[in-house]
Image (cartoon, rainbow, N blue to C red; front, side, top):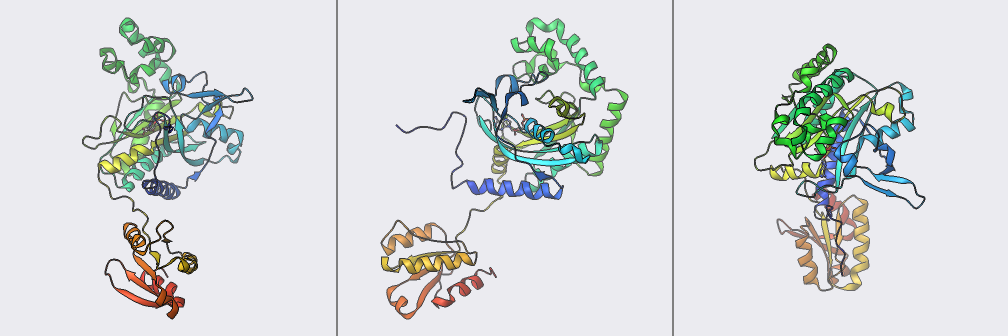
Length: 423
Ligand code: AMP
């Protein structure tokens, strides 16, 4: 019996991978403009990188893939990118330069969630982190970058939602206020939220079950509890966004799914008709404690992550002509098997001139080869016939104009390079 893929995972088939390549190229191109460099960290980490005392989000408490390796070490497949990046930042003492560290990553994450369209158990994110500075201009740069990137992909319907949780003090006051607000409603909250009430009432705000609970709808917002400093920090972030003419909306109840955020949090949403519930393309925020929690100095950072499947789904939904499948420059067809070595020689030479070329390895008959060549959409056919071979020429046919010319063996490369303008 054939074995199926793991629930919640998917294959990127050869007919689709060009979309992923283009997306990755675009990520690298734009991040380069903002002076971010790629960091590659392992997919598995010691569990304590994610399972930290202060982290009570569902993602970390309920959705991780945890396992013991053969040496009885507790490992976790990363459910998100930031914690591993910070682990690496601390372990490699990247802070010792005293400079801001600007990095990005691209790779798979793993969460045991209920699979549906746009929600998988293995999914790809690209994420960006700027570690080692607290500056509203940097928070703004992160949001500008996220917005700019999505615009450059060609997506039109994009919304930026932004909020501030304030500094430690503000957050503590707000948490206290939330606790007092929810306490009288404890009995009617879901089981998880009852727990959250004492451990981390902020989490109640993005509970999927209690979303429509009256107490959640009427809950106070972080904005009401920002102290003077946090208020002016947030104001400054917005001023930077204004000069960059980024349109955003303030989302007073946005708290984001992870517990390490403070000050600025934001989300980028697709605003596409009929796109569905999985319209959050990405999000992020400032973290002040994460570096020290993972054993590093007291330095803050800010980052965001974008779901790559969702970006591709949004591009499809908006019919954006975003990437082209690979096109063959030429396809070699031989009249009989003895001429295959000639084909091999020509293919090697043309590839040497950076042309994308192929020949047939499954069909023996000329007709079959021709059919396959046309299916492949090759721009030119190089036809090697017996008689022609003896004369030292091949036929080269432009598949669009159907014009065929005889070309000397020694001139094939030059001919095609000129025709294809690949000098
Ligand atoms: P998060 O790390 O939860 O803040 O998620 C950031 C982005 O990653 C989301 O906005 C989604 O685009 C994407 N994402 C999160 N979880 C999944 C998932 N299970 N499947 C696909 N994409 C996801």
